[in-house]
Image (tube, rainbow, N blue to C red; front, side):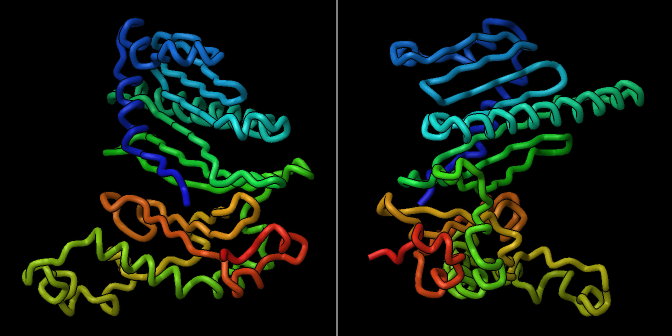
Length: 300
């Protein structure tokens, strides 16, 4: 249902930007091919400490790299072509950059005060179109953040824009309640997630089976450790822990539901995010608010 937004590709871009030490290297990192100019894109080359802005039509891409932080923000033409949505995203862009700049400034000050190396913070935000319908556009947001530590982290979010009302909605707002939607999709979701987990988790050797692990000895069992947290990611996450998206296969109505479990929600960081797509069925349709039911359908 969704185009994959590759965190590793973003991280690679982040490393290139953060490591640049000359205008030439930065220009190479932020290079826009000549064919982009032929299609009317606006682009400003930048060296470290400056900003690069490029756009094709109504799309927008901003890149900032300086000694304090790396910031990137982009959205596609389909989103930028709607004036209200463009203003909404531009406002979010400004807020996001202000927040990462403030965090980075404080962290850099702490590093200077307490005499330890400072590694630039980063925030990379990318919006993608999930589906573009006559009256609605559904978007997914992928974030990659680094605020110190061994590695950065990624997370996602969803947004639905009502073209008629020119207003944003969280996808869950289209449903009568989170509880009713969860009841309608939990069984199918957990079954699909279980299959994905099995693909990513090869069978373990006998010595690696649970009964052989130290944490499964009596003194390490939960009843002996009240503060113990299950690190095995065996449970099926609740809806509130997932990113909810609404999609379409016919470009006319919402007839698919996307559920993304970000790293550490359904699996380890190494396993990456888990994405499940479910078709709208009668139970899911019944969970849609009456005023939005016309925007949904059961796929044929």
